[in-house]
Structures are given as C-alpha cells and as structure tokens.
Length: 80
Image (cartoon, rainbow, N blue to C red):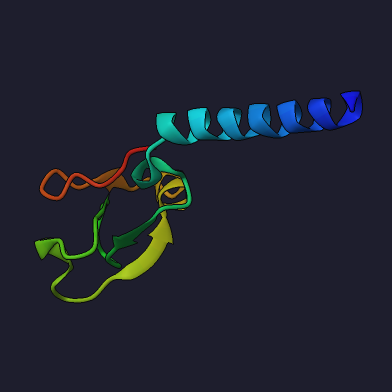
C-alpha cells in the first residue's frame, strides 16, 4: 500500500513540474523554433513576413543567431 501511494505521489509531482516549466517557456520562444532567412539578408523572420517575398530558407532560431542573423523589426520573430 505504501509503495502505491509513493508511485502516485511521484507521478502527480512529475506532472506538476512538467506543467510548471511548460507554462513558463512559451512554445514560440524555444531555440528550435523555425524562422526564415534570405541568402543576402542579415535578419531572420517569421513565416509570412513581407521581407520573404523572394524566397526563404528555414532555420532554427539558435542556428540563425549563431550565424549572426538579427531578428526582423517588422515581424518580431522569437529572440530566444
């Protein structure tokens, strides 16, 4: 009986921790969120930004920042 109670408590505690952290970090801000760059550009963008009208290359936010791209001021992509 004690073992079952501990397992239930552990499961509930683990679920609460996951929900707590999920609530603090919005999905849009995760480092692997896809943003878009252009070949000659210096900025990364959200899908649908006017700056992408001539084509785009999908990339993660973290990779875009590592390569020196800055967030677009028009579409305000995640800056994580």
